[in-house]
Length: 152
Image (cartoon, rainbow, N blue to C red; front, side, top):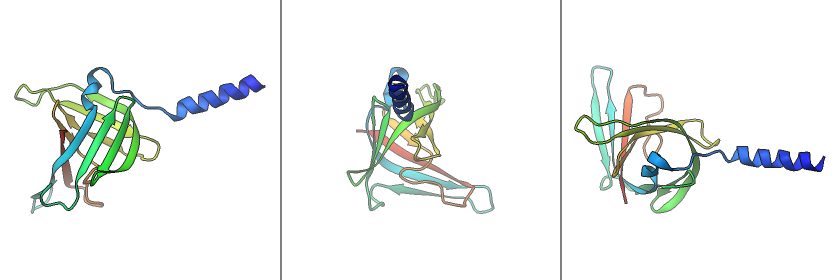
């Protein structure tokens, strides 16, 4: 009975910490990334628009950090505000049309968040399409967001 209890505890502990390590081609994520700008596009009706938020027009600074264990940290004004374990759903290697490598990614963020985090990545630029630091406007289906980060 004691062995069964220990086995159950180990199984629960191991399954509750699911995350993907940043090894192989996903090592490109590792390190700190600083937010530089966000572009929001509105399309689909008679008055499309676009606006850009930059570090000089925003009142806060934002950053992300990825460590090899598969952990992602979010920072606002140099203070950690979130910590997530990441589990990859999709990883595709590709090019941007000019011969530059551009990888598409999508991953789940812990059990705390049921949304997926996705975007594009190359050696010095990380683009996110949702959640951080700016997300789509709630209730607005025709808004696309691109958050740009550069490697520190």
